Length: 109
Image 1 (spheres, one colour):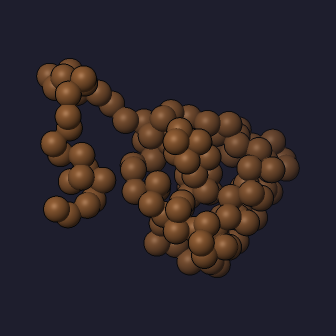
Image 2 (cartoon, rainbow, N blue to C red; image 1 turned 180 degrees about the horizontal axis):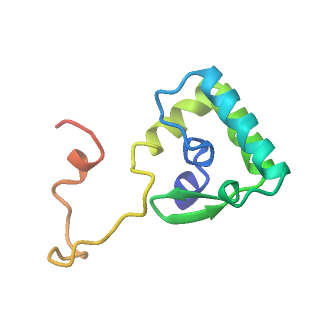
Image 3 (cartoon, one colour; image 1 turned 90 degrees about the horizontal axis):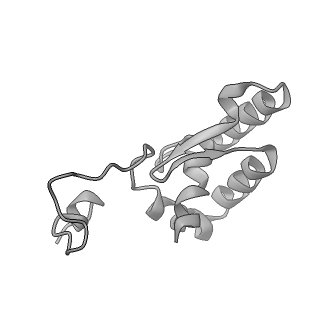
């Protein structure tokens, strides 16, 4: 499950799940060029589980996954979490049910 989050193609490419195929291509090419010349900004990306390392192979894989409609749907589902690391509320217990979970993920009951 954590791989679905840490290697989510939308997080890797720093795109929203509503982006177009053209947006995917442009972001991927831009990141590949940035990695090629060694730009520090291109070497990491944010996920709800913290910062992750990015390389050209991961960028190419993310682009390929978002070109495939079936694969893209799965990435869209997992990309509903915010791209910033999740923080824990100090007041709420972490061992019980989370009644607001559906709402936090954008689901309606």
